[in-house]
Image (tube, rainbow, N blue to C red; front, side, top):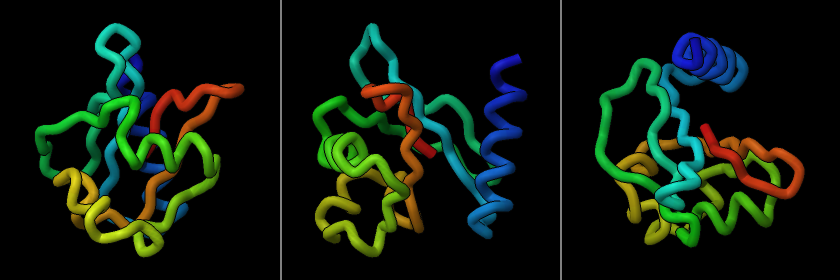
Amino acid sequence: SPSGLYQAALSACCETFGVIGAVLFLYDHDRQVYTLASVLEMDRLDGDFGADSLLVTRLRSGRAVLAMADVPVGERDSSPWLKDARCVIPIHREDALDGFV
């Protein structure tokens, strides 16, 4: 099932990056937002990321793991999901940003 696969992927990310919890956002083509797909060891919060949000723009252009220490405070404060984040891992397929952890 997709939810089992998502949980396994999040668990692998946590082990790799030495963090306790993670969340997966995937692109919803109908709504044109990145929406919560799975959560591991974290509280569920409200909020999606628009396709034109600063974070998404940064992930699209950088195509690399984004350390939140390198993101301006105002941008980190734009979503409750980013408040305690250490990094954001983009998931690219060809030229598209399919989601992020």
